[in-house]
Image 1: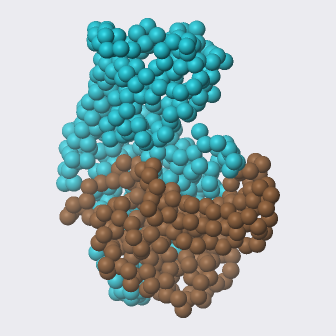
Image 2: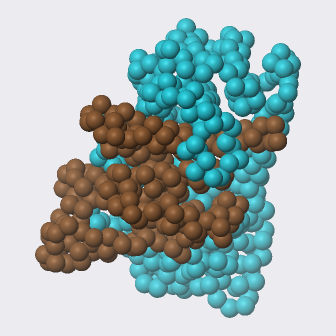
Amino acid sequence: MGRGSLRLYLAQEIVRPDSRLEQLYLDGEKTDEHRNAPPELKRTFVVNLSRFMLSIVARLEEHFDIKTRATETNPPVISLNEELDSLLYIVDRFVHVELEVEEQINIKQHLGRQLDSEVQHYLTRPRYRDHLLHVIDVFLLGHLLLNTELRWLEERKMSLIKHLELAAAKRGGDHQPMLIAVLTGTVGRASKRSLIVRFTVSGRVPCSGA
Amino acid sequence: MNQAKFEKLSRTLLDLIYRIKDKEHLLRVSFGLLGADLAVLVRRTSAEESGQVTIHHVYPAEYKGRLQDSDLHALREWYDSGDSLRDIDGFAKEGPIQIAGEEFPDALVAFGARISDNRCSLHEMFLLKKRGDEEFYRSYHCWAAAKLICAFESHCVLPKLTRQRDTLSNLKEEYAASLSDEVLQDESWNDLKKRMKDRPPDIQWRSYTIWTGYQVRKKKGAKPAEKIGSALTDTEIGDPPDHMKILSDVIEFLTKDFCVLADSGYSKELYKKLEKKLGSVIDNPRQDKNRMWLQMILIALEHAWRNLRYDVSNRRIEHSFDSESHEKPQSPDSHAGNLSKAIETARDLLCLTRGIVIHVLVSGGLTKKKRRTAKLVRSPKTSGIGTRKSPPLSGPGDRKT
């Protein structure tokens, strides 16, 4: 799964129906939470959401071969700087509101500190992969893994974690660890950088790290 | 084999090389020249995966129906070591091999020319002997067999591949030249239509779509999509009665001057219709009509998101990088009454965009090469949209094939 697909994953995860983000910023009808949000906060969210979604649409246009040529009189759908800025904002809101990470930890500020030295490399070299966007990719990949449900062992549809527990139990050890390496490489070659998730399959809540 | 025998073999081989006509002839010649009892030609079906091969031809014909997939695996497993086969003509096997229910005491594999930029050869030829008590296959037999395969490829395969590649290359160049480079931003609709008159419908449509993209960027609230609608009847894209209703809905949506401020906004009813249409569109984006639809919808979405961004931020922000400034719009009061409509529009647009994104994700993501597992892995939170008909994954202990 490449970077583009992970962005799409974030696009479909962000502001799901009945999610906290929807309740807070988009006047969701399930709770009255949105009444507590100042209008300016909502406006900022909608602006950044629009910018982020424009970057998603641009990816889709490229995928379906209708991306137009950018010129001086025909600027790109969204500038690269704007795309990155909105991405950091969306990740920040997603982490704080949906995953309930404390607001004291300023995610956007922490991520933004890496920006100056790395942004040009990221935006001009498609295969360049270092800290900032890689951290976001790993975060999204981990989120995807922990929320993935599939039909695998015994034809049963359940979460990936449950499948791993079942696989460990079949191998005869209640505490047998299982190591999963998720390669984030492309074009059929493994990346030098990989996400390695180690699940201790013992019936407890698994932990993951990268 | 002594020196005299080897030279005789070489001379015979050189005489034969220029007479190879087809795969049947290749195997028949190899069969006779190298004293085999069974000859199998295997062809690669994937330029990237070394294990993706299929049996291309068998000689004698009596073995054709008897060879199974497991035989192909047995034929290759003893030497297949991935990417270490560069510049090697082939291998002679030590020990017998079981193929088609028979035991062959002696066997060799020879490789054809390597595909450019790839370590894998396009063809592999297997020669198997029942008589193991005679002279065993050695490296020069492999060399001879490899030369025969190369002769076959250079005479029978490569010219065809070159023709295909040239044709494809010409088509791509023509396509690119007629679309990306020649769609002029300042060209009028009538001029564009006149110039595209004799082009294939698919090229016409893409030109019109790209022209639309230029126009919606150039002028906010422009109505170029009306031209797209009329173009349907001008070109031979066809089926206007069935598709025009949906298209007219998209056009109506696209041509709203300010979708945020429009009274009707982006209705749920339209969303449902579009979502239903998307189900058939994205399943096969390469199909002409579906691709045209998708292009149209993406242009509409882009236009709508751009309008939303413009109206909510109240100024052009393409080149702004300081997000903090967006929190202080120039005229907050002028937007106070519109914020709720903007939010409503954002919700509607999200529904449609998420619908496309989820369809793309469950059909293999953004990579050109579809992966089997990509179809299977899916967040439970997306289960409410779309359908999934993929086979289950095998268990962790299963062998990878």
